[in-house]
Structure formats: C-alpha cells, structure tokens
Length: 260
Image (tube, helix red, strand yellow):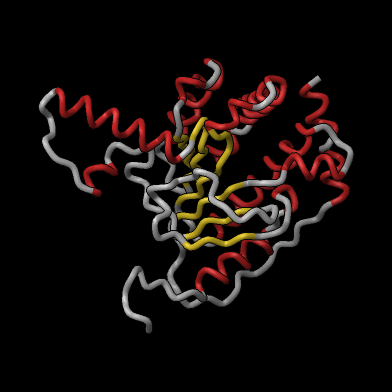
C-alpha cells in the first residue's frame, strides 16, 4: 500500500509542476559553504490536495532532490536537511512506519544516482533508535559515497540539537573518567558533536511560514543567517532557493563587530 501511495503521486507531480531552470543572480560574495534546511509543510501540502500524508513526503523528497541540484550548481559544499527529529518519535506509529518505508525506498533506489553524480551522503543523529534496516542502508550509502568530491548531503535523522549536545556531554564525561581530557573549550567541544568536520551553516532556510528553529543545529547556528519562506516545502523551487541566497548575500554579517 505504501509503495502504491508513493507512486500514485508521480504523475500528478510531473503533470502539475514544471520547475524552470533559472540563471543564478549576479552576486559578488563568495559561494556559501553550508546551507541547512527545515523542510516544513509536507503534510499540509498533501491535505490541501486531498492526498495521503505520505504523498506529501514523497513530493518533499522530490523537492529535496531538486534543491540538492540547485545547491550544487551554486557551489554549496554541504546541504543539511532536517529529515526526522527526535520529537517525531512521539507521532503516530503508522506515520513513522510510512516515513521510514519511504526513506528505505530512496536509500535503496537512489544511492546509485547519488554516486553517479559525485554526491556524498552523510547522516547525523541518534541512529541507535532507527530501524535496523535503515541503519544498514545508511552505512551502505555512506560507505559507497564516502570518496565522492561533490556536494555533501547531510540527513538529520532521529536528530535534535539538544539531544546532540547531551550526547556530546556524555561522551566528554566518559573521556574525563578515562583520563583522556581534563578541560574543554568551544573548539574541543565541537569534536564531540555529530557535525565534527562539517562547517557551521552560514544560511538556514525554513519553509511553510513558520518562524522558529525547532531544536535544529542549536550549537552550529549561533551565527547563522535565517531566511523564512511562506511556501510549503514540496512547492519550494530553485527560484525560491536563489531568492534565499540573494537575501543572505545582501546582509551585513558582523559577528558582534562594529556597524559598518
């Protein structure tokens, strides 16, 4: 039933939407290294069209593919997508099962395409809580793409910022007990985070009109510029993405310094 529901919206998506390929705006600043995205609005998109909720997530996955291509074109090195939060474990079991079924389908069927396009896949979060099948598919996908040199797509799975920080502190406690460290600062603390060796995002985009960060990359977004868009995630196009980049590059980032 899940696969039928997923495939049933393919024709709708293809027949209803056309996503124009736009030229990049004229921007003078250097490319953004890391963009984080809160992909919000999949369920509302499906309800508006009287479709099953899983259809919204299917359309959202297509949007993620589209924005990955756009990000790569703009020279972005890392694109982190908020895929499944720790709080999402509190949702209806059927919803969780359907979502992981869709994720498994993509990990099994899209990995060849990712590898062919020189895309590296990484994941962050508490993976011990994920279904064993998903854990195995993640390991397989990360191993297959680990040497790719194109854009790195980071999926935040069973992830929240507070949980990541708590897990980092527990790792530090263990190392202190073993006598391996006796002090910590912000740089050494970052070694214990899921995002170690990934630069902090310069820009974070949230769709659907909500204006909050929802426990996402709390440590990493201390100086991140936030852009909020009213469009639901499945309708988020390359044009919306470019507008967010344009807004970011026209901001004055002072990091606590004097006003220019």
